Image (cartoon, rainbow, N blue to C red; front, side):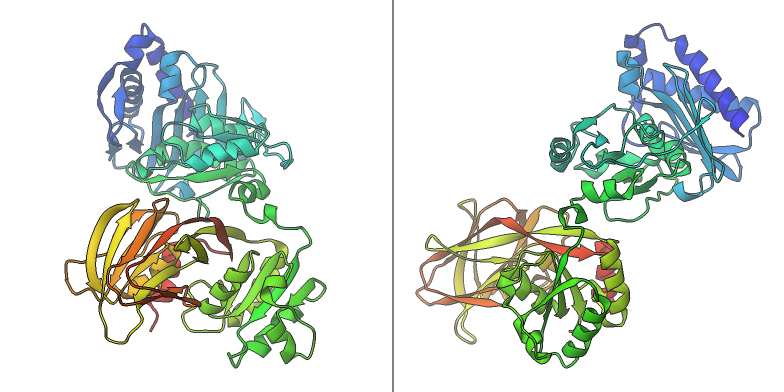
Length: 534
């Protein structure tokens, strides 16, 4: 198979050498199957591959950037990017390849990869289980020096703003516009990682771009994760796209996502528990035993259960907080302490908790070994009459202070009237809170990566009064139109009296809450904790 791919690359190289100039190479001749424009050089390269396969009766289906899927009746499929780095090829930048990989259905079952830099002639190959090679020399990733990182980072016009922040955090970074070769640089130990984080799904990577280089990297000892912490896999579908982090050293992945790199290598652990839970003392005992040998500080209520000294949550100087209870325990803790939180569920649904009670020992061991990521979520702050009140992880709720009494509200976004409604109250919720109170009122679930808040009328008089999703950076103002008072409740923990004919402002806080996560897949969490819950 490798010999066949080499001959195909020869044919492509010969064909594009005949294109007279850059103007002809870059001429747009239509739209590809992936929805992007097709240049002359792309189509010539693709036609060359298709013709070679047909002429030589090679039993391979083809999945290509321009034409899509071609069924030739084969068991295997050639995943083809005829020219990766088209803009480089047009501009005369010597970084563009023909990229070919062979497999059956997805990125995970690709068994053969072949790349050729059509400007330099460098050949990069890999076979599953047999290693990766460049010009015959074996490739191997390198151990990262965290204070001297060199990263490849996609910084094009579709890049997520966090990518530019990352470029400022590392010693050196580059964006070459050729994903296959950028991945190869990681595989050969010349770069430490490659981040592809597009702000829009349509600008993220396609399987044809990285099918070959992914196998090369994995055979060189590296790995590729999506941004949720899962090993990257993609179906053979040109419409499917993904963001990812490719790396040779797992510490690079952690650094990029601002994970445990911010936590001391010998952390001090705090233990905070809801002592109203009948299992709290037993669960805390199991946690302390699993943390034996580590520095631990107990919150005063659970410490009293053991007859030992404890501290108020706000005075606990710890690197990681372990909470035992439900979501309320996590929210109360986050109000008073900024340490990353790992929740052990001793309550009901425990949507924010990471570890079930039956898995305490395993969860603590993973925590001690550093097998986690730290997920940051934004908070919203509440201001009344120009005075700061509190910050919410989930939501801030303005509701009537009298039973069965409706209130009249006006809601503004950046000082412009959004809606006027008669209702029991108004919820202003973060994405984190969208799976809580807001959800119970029919508001949409919001992926925590979405930079938005949702404004939800509570038991509105008019059926047409529906939730609004607005940018997280907007100022949301809730005005109480009538003389009658209301109550502001923050995360179900703090209450404030709100007078009639006044207003409360809600803005995104500069503070965040951080959760220890072993699995950052939001959708599986929704399925397990909400869809299948009683």
